[in-house]
Amino acid sequence: MSSATVDEQRVVIGSLSPQDVATRCGNVSLKAVNRWLNSGVLVGSRRVKLRSLKIGGRHHITEADLSEFVAAQNPGRASDAPVPKVRERKKRLREAVAQLRELGVNLPGKKEEAA
View 1: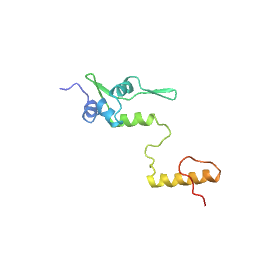
View 2: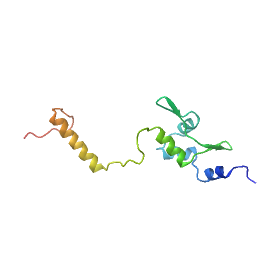
View 3: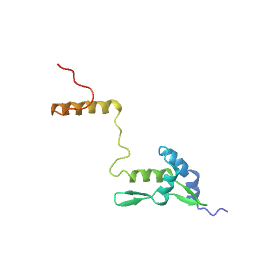
View 4: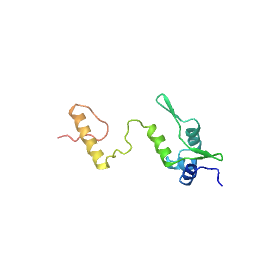
């Protein structure tokens, strides 16, 4: 009979290794992931650690733990907020540039053609 609880078995089956986390986070170093697990990161005045279940000396990280860790580093930012499409971002940029020019702000880059 296994000494692991049902919850532990469920976590291990669908878990990520520290190397998997490093790859998912844009190829950060394994050393960084281990630091997140052991020491955490400072967010404002509090320290946030990447939670894991350690079995047999190995860390097992769930998708939920990774999502929580990322969300804790970005307080006030809704993770499900839609990201504007490129066309919308370009439109907003053009509008902002137009407003700045109306205010007399000279921007680097392309020069306006003389009318």
